[in-house]
Image (cartoon, rainbow, N blue to C red; front, side, top):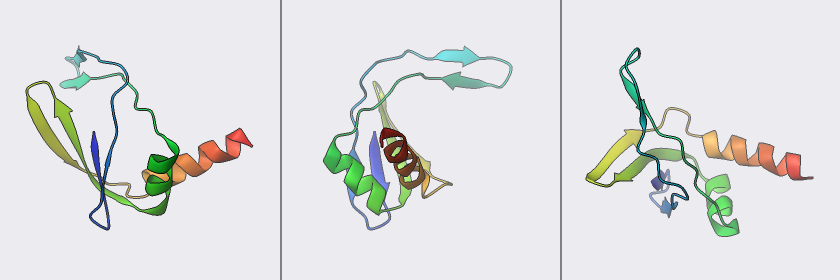
Length: 85
C-alpha cells in the first residue's frame, strides 16, 4: 500500500498477510482482511502529516483511493500510543 501524504511524500506499507477476499453479495462489495506493520520511521511520518490518497497494489495492477478522513492515521496512532503507556 502506498500512502500519499499532504506534502507529496509517500509512505510504503507492506502487507503482512494475503487475503483473496470475501464477496458480500448483499452490499456488492469484496472484503479483504489483512494487516500492515509499521516501523518507528513510518509511524513518525504518518503522525506528522495528513494522508490524501492511498494506492493499493493488487496482484493484477493497482487502484487509487481518495481519503476522506485526512487525519485518520494521526488520530489512530496517537490513540495507540496512549494505550501503550
